[in-house]
Length: 472
Image (spheres, rainbow, N blue to C red):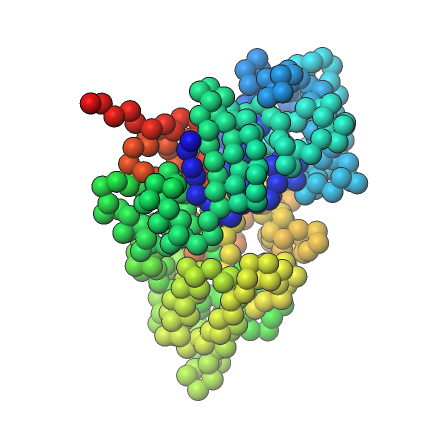
């Protein structure tokens, strides 16, 4: 038995409804998808190859491998169509429906071929087809995939005996894998040291990682991540809606020191949502400069000084490490004359406030960004909730135009040009102040081998993990 410690349990093992990171990562082990991504997040074939017949017609042809469902049936085109038809049905309320709404219809000429017809051209379309495929007959029968998943991935579901424990079985060697939720990071580490856990990934404070790195019975693997952390603002607020105030905040933050001393070096500074290596990323963007004197000058020009300081309310979650980061940011901003009132809440309350626009300034992370349609979702003026995640009400005609030009591009290369320009414009206008991309940290017992850290933090490498056999 291999035991993996989690900070939170999966919400659902039905990929048609999964949106949280834990559910998505475990579902990847149970189900296979039509499309994957390479190191630059360019879509590549997984279950199927594809060709673009016309601008609005994509043909996917299933490969021979990875097509055996765990209940013994063969995955075919009907299963693909049934999976996506279910998501597209409005009454089913799948959270993925909005992304896939451009699909006009799906046809299956034979058991290996799926034709997707779109209601508008979109070169990004293959990258949207990342939902795990379910058996069509079980969909029709109303099978409860959320608690009893059946896919064709490298791991088969065993049981979910309680909310805090999910058990899988690796098909190639019948190795048992148990995911165990232990919210407290210190308790999680203690269980790892006692041998009650074999591995942990992320959600550990730097001081615990530093402590573990000194132990001979523990192995630590670090890898660059793509999760983007930022400060967000309510653009309708008369204070932080002022560009000069946001610019002063950007210059007042010493990201390098925070990364080095607070995060244990486990991050890299960010200038945009997409990492520079992304096919639509902008590696030419300069990093935001730490310049407290310039921050003070901007504040003075805006009419603020020590006798009339800027006062900002900053919302964050009640996670101890996030509160610590907020406290450091509070301290750095205080040095330039910005008084910050930190308000921390349990996750549900905090996230509810952010989604409903009840904030002045907040910090959050975007996790698992792979396709640049995220810019439409987050920054277009028409994407104010409930139509998207433009929670700060950013409305900028230049940004809207660049998004539109990118969407009308005929290929990925042309899209990338517009998206690079957009990211440069976002850095100038600062609807977000970019902070960093957090690294992924995998901690395990020293006798485990075969794990590699993925840039998006997925658990795919569990396919290769095994205990080292000790020789006498």
